[in-house]
Length: 150
Ligand code: ZN
Image (cartoon, rainbow, N blue to C red; front, side, top):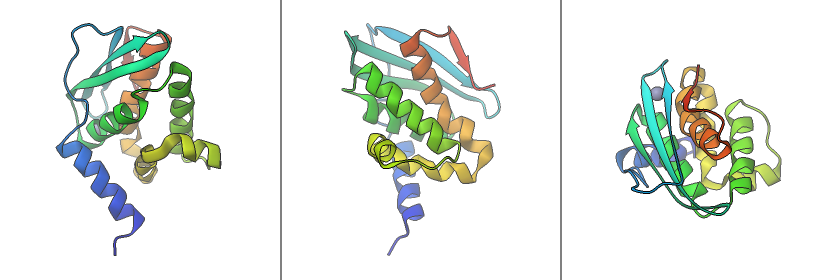
């Protein structure tokens, strides 16, 4: 019998081996690059919006297993959501990744993203896990041209 940590790790490694929604997009509504200089992770996200709905989201880039898996898991979760839902998920992710306790509503929002919660045990990797999320959040809110975790 596997413990929850083993199962979570297996899901993360699976997303690293076969990342979902990996590639580029011809006509994205928004696209943005993100960097994590601490680890050397680079990511580019492409989002296709229909009004406030995320119709399609893909990512491209190079980085460690954690950054890639996190981006992959994120795209699966955000596809089909509205921008405001995505922001609620992002807020819940940020609470989880900084080690805060989550209420049931936040856990429901996170869904499979919860597998990334184990990263809080490895503080050096938190920026790897949050890179894609920061990048998409900035892309959706039009915050900045390039995102860096520093
Ligand atoms: Zn990394």
